[in-house]
Image 1 (cartoon, rainbow, N blue to C red):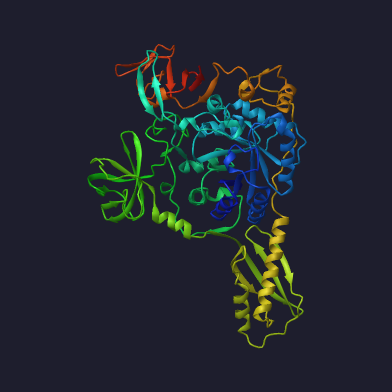
Image 2 (tube, helix red, strand yellow):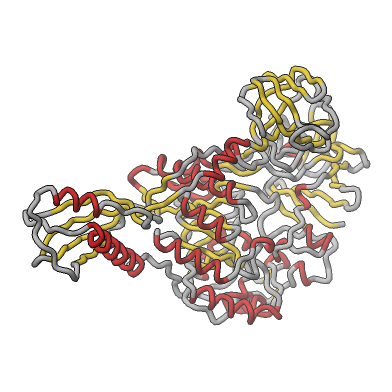
Amino acid sequence: MREVELLAPAKSLEVGLAAIRNGADAVYIGAPQFGARRAASNSLEDIQSLVNEAHKFYCRVFVTMNTLLYDNELSEAEALIWKLYEIGVDALIVQDLGILKMKLPPIALHASTQTHNYDIERIKFLDRVGFSRIVLARELGIEEIRRIRKEIKAEIEVFVHGALCVSFSGQCYMSEHIFGRSANRGECAQLCRQRWSLIDANGKTLIKEKHLLSLRDMKRVEYLRELADAGVTSFKIEGRLKDIDYVSNVTAYYSDELNRCLGTEYRRSGSGVVKRGFEPDLDKTFNRGYTNYFANGRGQGMTNIDTPKSMGKFIGTVERCKRNEVFIKSVESVNNGDGLCYIERGELVGVRVNRAEGNHLFIAVQGGSGGGNGVASLNIKPGTKLFRNYDHSFSTLLEKSSSVRRIGARMQVSEVDGRLKICAVDESGVNVEYISEKVFDVAQNPSQRDRLVQQLSKFGDTDFLCMGVEYLGDRVLFVPSAEANLCRREALELLMARRLELRPIMEQGTLNLTPGYIAERADWQCNVVNELSREFYSGNGCSEIEPGFEVSKQRKGKAVMTTKFCLLYENGRCLKGKGSGKRAGSVDGSGALVNGEEWKLPLHLDSGKEQFLLRFDCKKCQMIIESE
């Protein structure tokens, strides 16, 4: 039976605990420094607390140190790695290969998706180096993952849900190019979410001021079993900047789906039974609309060019609007306090429902009761589509509900020389034997058997869930309730201590620091920005090592993004004749022609302040965005 893992994000200790209590088998959290989400760093004390709680349930804590390091940061990063190891962190997720040249503790190393784990030869190289796990690029489909599994020994981790970067991870330099804020250093300005105009070679505006690079969110929940069968070990939810409600809801949903679809061939790496007070629903939490993103090949509809914000679930269309009253033709019920949104003249407009009477909605406006949103009055056109991006009832339910996770355990109780003997075993097969110090009298009343069993069954607010207590033998002891409680507590404490002793440990095998790189030249996209990284590539046969973008003096003409997403394909103008079902032009750059409309190449993206050249590598099916 193969072990699989649901991996959830943790912005903070509080969010990490919520992820565990809602079914995560592992969480990943940012260290005090050197994480790719600078706004989601955490203290060592908080990480220690998360580790202590997670390990009770055989859950794991991974720490992200997946930024590029400068030379003056190397010694500090090495010291931090040792501290993380000492507090029991299970693995490090890293990007900078210079870390491999440090003096490291025996902590498991995972190759972040930031190491550009898309090309099979690159992935095989990292496997030969000895990474215990490789986090694959989001762009890889199920069949590609299946082939990779046959080629490498390392565990495979894949993203299954959450926000998508339009660029290959680790290969986006636009933010650094424009603002000096490196995405590889945790400072991404998210320029892919802003408005862009698409301009052709003649200066004609083909698409004006739309969010052309803003991808929908990934949702691969329907592919969990296929991914497991393809060899995936870890199913990863994106979102180290997401709040506790988001993480609780999404983790709970995927945990339930994993339990449902995996069958008897797989088992979860974590243990424990989850009880929660809400029914998870992906449509009721933040999302930009969903895409399976190349799971089974290329498709259209990967972007929502109208807005990069969460629109939520479609709830109906407007029939008429009068002042602050809106009458709708609904497909979903609307409740007081809900947040609704719609597109008006290319902008996302949000409103709040003060009162809902069926399909008759009273909207909060400027100066109205319950506060306003800056809208003095409404004039929503009939036929406008309405979406709910804040479900008040669901959010209130999430806030009030308290998910708990308990480890199933059973007890067999008997008498030994007047002492109470408890044999306890948990759902993982861990077992202990406890014998009371105190000697008890034999009970005269036979009903004492049932009373003692009932008393010992009260596991209360411990980390264990009682799955049954059985009294063996004919000699029943008279054990006062207070003493029974003490025996139960000490037996369960002994069981937890034994669990922690036997907890499966992630191990890092011996690293091979000189397996030979896949090329004689390590170009600038290898992201070499420190001396240790340079030493690593030099030791692997690279005679030429270009400095990474962040430290390079020559940036002109370099790709600031490389992406599998293609604007030509998305708009039905694929140069290979796909997308629209017609041959749209020629691959020599003469233009993309569909239904008589020519897009004269080369194309440019224009923000009003910055302009970038688009190139299309049709052989690789990739779009390259270059600085000019």
